[in-house]
Length: 335
Image 1 (cartoon, rainbow, N blue to C red):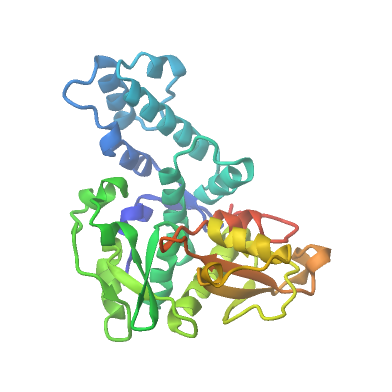
Image 2 (cartoon, one colour):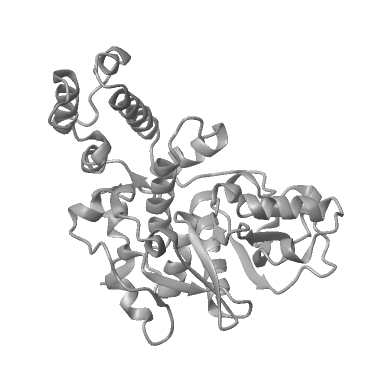
C-alpha cells in the first residue's frame, strides 16, 4: 500500500463515521515537538512545567494565568497561540469542521503556518486512495508556496522552500522526527519518474509542469474537485481552459490574492496589460453536478477559477477561497 505526506501527521489521527479526521492526543503532542515550544535550557520553571504537563495530558486546561507567568515574552506568545489553536480544534468534532469554522469566522491571530498545516492534513484525507502522483503533487500548491519558472517554453512550478534551500524547521515537526531527508534534487514529475513520488512526497522536491494543455493543470483541477467534495460535500466537474474569451464572468473565484485582483479587474471591465495577464497561470471552468446546491442567480452558469502568480513569480494559493467564494447554499464540512 502506498502512503504519502507522512509529515502532516495523518497517521496520528482517527476518523469518524463521516470520514473526517478526529484529533488524538498523539496528534496534539506533535505540536509540542515544535522547536518554538521546546523549552530551551534557560527556560523558566513555569514554561518547563506547562510543557511537561501538556506532554502528559495534551488536553489539559491551560488558563491565561499559566501563560502569563512564563518569563520570556516570545515564549508566552508562542504558548498563547498554540493553546488557542488547540482549544479551537478540540471544540469541533473533526479537523474539517474546525477548518470550516476558522474560515467562516476569520483566521484572526491564528498563525498562517497552523492554517497551512490544517489544509495539509485535511487534503491528505481528501486525496486518500488517489493513484495518480501528479494529482498529489498538484495538491502541494494548496499549502506550500511555489516558485514559477519559464524553461524551454514550459511553465514549471517548484517548491519555494526547496528551491531556496530553506531548512525544514518551518514545516511539520514530524519531518525531523521521521528522519526525512532535508535536501534532495528537484525533478519535474513525468511519466518516467512519477512513481518515485510515493517515497519522496515529504521532501517536496518534485516540480510540476503548469503549461497550458499539459497534465499539471488537469491534475490541479482533479485536486480541487476532491477538496470541494470532501470539505463542502459538493460534487463538481472542473476542466482547465486556455482563455476566458467572451465567457460571461457571472461568478469567479480567485485561487490566490493576485488572481482575485485580476478577476475583480475583469469583472469591472478594466483593460489589463499584457504583463498582468501573463501572470495568469491557470483558468478553470467549474460546473456543479447538483444544481440544487447553487444560488439561483448562477444556477445555469459556470463558475470560473483563476490561478495567478505574483510579479516575482510566486504562487501562494488560498484554498479557503474555495470555501468562502463559491455560490452555494450550504457549506457543509465533513462531520
